[in-house]
Image 1 (cartoon, rainbow, N blue to C red):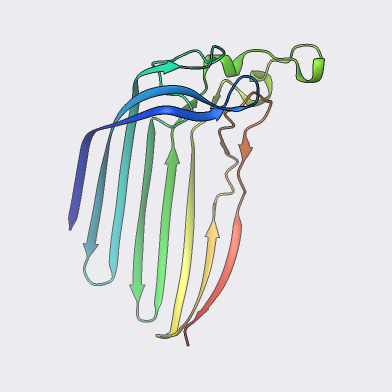
Image 2: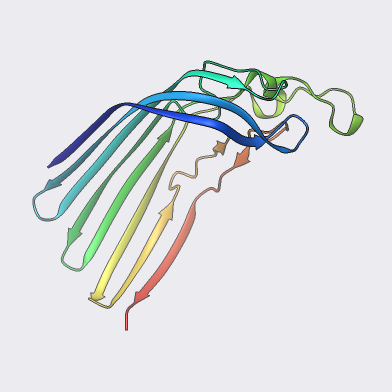
Length: 193
């Protein structure tokens, strides 16, 4: 059994490059984040192993080079909480894995929720289309693997087993976030010569 705890990790981002208010790549901000991560790895007998990790982060302060980007002392564009976990079971030549992923709420900057006029049209409120934040989400993945020999194996993976609808943040002015794929089935054959 192994456990690792890291705490009070401070990250500083100086001259973060992103798309500025004029649509150009630019140094838009400097920020300081503080967070912690913990991880647990465990083995149960010879056949089963487990893992879990949890991360938390918060923004300490931020300054901005771009007048259209209002500095924020609350975390934006990243989840404050994320959790991963899983179990792996071996039986003879077979292997079964189940893993889960959780991402907490992702906040937007206040300026990203302001109405804008695409192509000179009347102002549009982006929160009506994508919300004022990215909602939290979770997914589960399964993998079944069989080892015929040391050099030949096959596997079936099912990603996002519950077919959850979820998004990752689009941190530019717009009406959409990045929709992620639903359930996916992946069949693989691995052969070493």
